[in-house]
Amino acid sequence: MVRATYGAPRRRKKARYFKRAKGFWGGRSRLWRTVYESVVRALAYGTRDRHRKKREYRTLWIARINAATRMRGISYSAFIDGLKKGGVELNRKQLSELAALDPATFDQLVAVARAAREQPTAAK
Image (cartoon, rainbow, N blue to C red; front, top):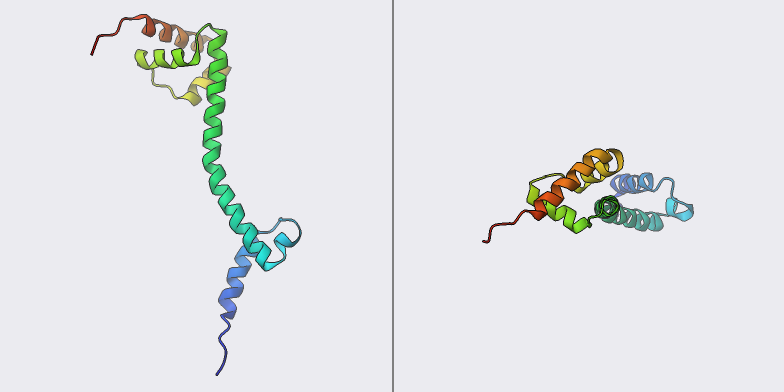
């Protein structure tokens, strides 16, 4: 009885992993077991970090908006609350860009936020 070795499919599978490990250092690009572990771990880190990147950008945008609003004498939370009450629907990325690149428009947004917070709201 001939022993089945799963030859060609296994070689193709290994070749895919070795191709992904190209550029890894030392045995991580040459030794099958190490290549497999490295590639699987790299893919897991990639998935995690794609989600983490979104979180880190939002943190950066908030820090920029906070710095810009404090320079204008209002806190970040009061600014965001005022924008919501004023009906301004800009996301934090857009607000951050305005704060950095167009200070005049950002000043107008701060004025809108202040005015919206000073208006009495109807009781629910």
